Image 1 (tube, one colour):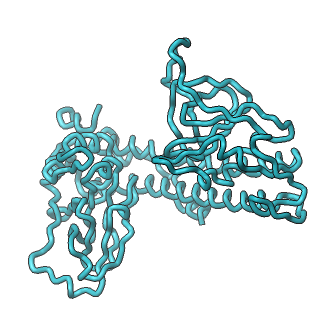
Image 2 (cartoon, helix red, strand yellow; image 1 turned 90 degrees about the horizontal axis):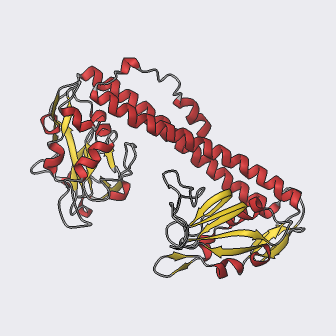
Image 3 (tube, helix red, strand yellow; image 1 turned 90 degrees about the vertical axis):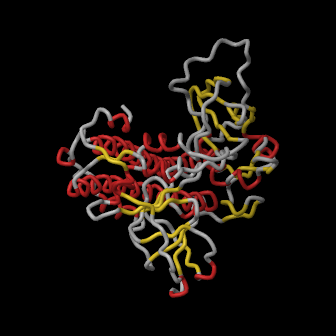
Length: 416
């Protein structure tokens, strides 16, 4: 049941957000010149996904010709599409000045009276049902639609006693902090992987002298080999109409993972023990994914399932291309593009198969660590959504929860 449907079938009482909060307005006669610098938050500095603080730019008062006035403690809600739908909003916890300015595309909200935990409003506005309800009531031309202040202020909001508001906000904040810590750990491990790749693909594992090649220094015994001599690339093709209907795609095979997900497609079903997939058009152009078994290949991907050199390991080749970053030689023709010809013009330095396997084992171990942090973060994000709904409706209470397993300090130490 949608959160807002609890207005008629509820465990709590409800009021309007506007009964508890108001839009922050700039005081009349405010003298900006009294400050040397004023914090300013452009739209790209407004976070999304539950992070509180925006990154401020320090501006001279004379440089602020327009903007939205806000104060410490305000909730800033992005009002323009797609920023609102993407969950861009901020809670001004710390402010290096009595007030600040933000992009004109936010709405600042503050409590009308004491007793309201602003964190609860911040989390409430992240609820998918609330986002969907408000997004449907945006006004303006396509692509420039905005949330009217009245829509936010007229939203139903549960009546919760101040002590319980704080308890709910503390619980939700703990989950968000744990998710943020996992994301930080993931980024730390990704940085470790990038550093490991730089070392492994330039120095190898044997401590041997290096030689210069067209792609930079590599171990002396490694053999630079043209890509077209290692594998044969094929373009993904849209499934012809005269073939059998495509099976149910309720649980489709991902076309591309690792560096990003390209999506799903009704395309050729490739059944091969080892397949390398390379995004060739659009957002995930140049991203490399290694797969085994059945995968769906879209027409905006290249794939290699015919390996011409028996001593070339799929894992090593795929990870080298990931390190080499195919984006560096993709062509920009309206949209990013990588072609078979571009890839075939390049070489991959191949060590002996045993060294290839050892390098892949090291990088696979790091990838598993990245995957673990991603999985933990996904679980925490789902937990946050579920508890947000159930706590706001009164279906469960904070006293019913045991969040002792969320030791944010340990995760933070691991990320340091």
